[in-house]
View (cartoon, helix red, strand yellow):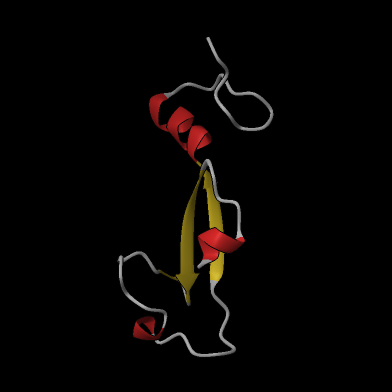
Length: 69
């Protein structure tokens, strides 16, 4: 549902509730004890930036995308 509402292209979407990452596929928010009115934190991680950090390539453009070589 969030992917339809938010443009997450080029990003990794992570959800957290009370410090716990909600990452198991096919689980519902209710299965994590999230109730109406609770706050779920959403983090978008830039895929290109994470790859650059992981592989030691710091040659990125200002928008966080890897530069073409």
